[in-house]
Amino acid sequence: MKLVFVCPQNHKTFETDHFNIIQDNGIKITETGQRVWDAKVQLASACPFCGKIHEYQVSELPCPWS
Image (cartoon, rainbow, N blue to C red):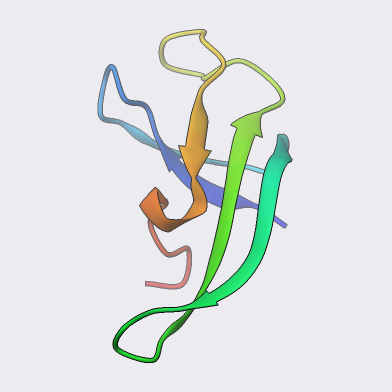
């Protein structure tokens, strides 16, 4: 599965399936009743724009279906 990421340095968007789930706290329900995945992912290969390995909260990632 590919996720959409945004380089925090260059603000450019890219897709990759080279990531690892490094923290998984399961599904949480927000105050508005939405179900969200409370997890953190880390790139498994360098960012194509800046060459660094970034970490992201899943909630910060853009929706790949929008």
